[in-house]
Length: 247
Image 1 (cartoon, one colour):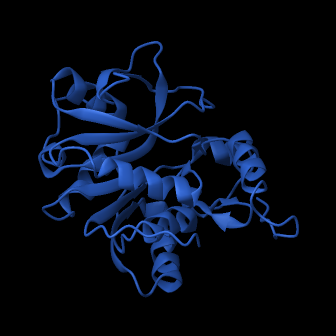
Image 2 (image 1 turned 45 degrees about the vertical axis):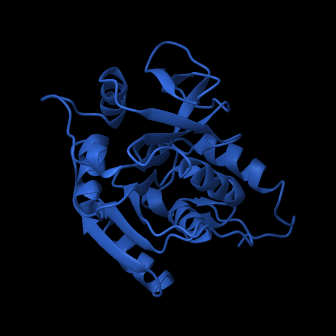
């Protein structure tokens, strides 16, 4: 683990309730949180990122088909304060709101389980995000676009404030990492809204304070080719002899 730490008395949330359908189509049979990049499960990677940032109280959600992930997480990280929800949700927004219900009264850092990045970059994101006003939603964003359906973000280059979200182009794309204040976690958006990206776009359009912190490289691991991309990046910092898992 990188020798970095942020004194950050906040909780973390991990959204890991997706089915991983595109990975299954590519031959991966394990639950998505347990898919490995260079031998490390995605779930272990993201929990390690939180630990490096000084966040040891985590709320996680898995779907009913992946309840073994709860046992694995508790056995692998017995020293952490884990609140685990096992529930099959209808959408990413429902998972986000379910996790939000169980977070404390202060700002919380929420990440999707498939947002792969270097640990030091995650820590830097947390440090930078906590410098913005405490009532602001802060998005992790990246210029590294390797997603078939990216959520584009337009930023004010001077202030870092998000001026638009969800347009056909922008400066950067979202990464699945969010520093979320309590008032945003209490919102649910208009009736009929189903996807987290729709909720985030609505928050921006409502004029609520939304800022963004750039992270140079984040891979959204949804497809087998995303695993290959992340492993190439991982191998830039890992010894060549590091054991790698196979699907």
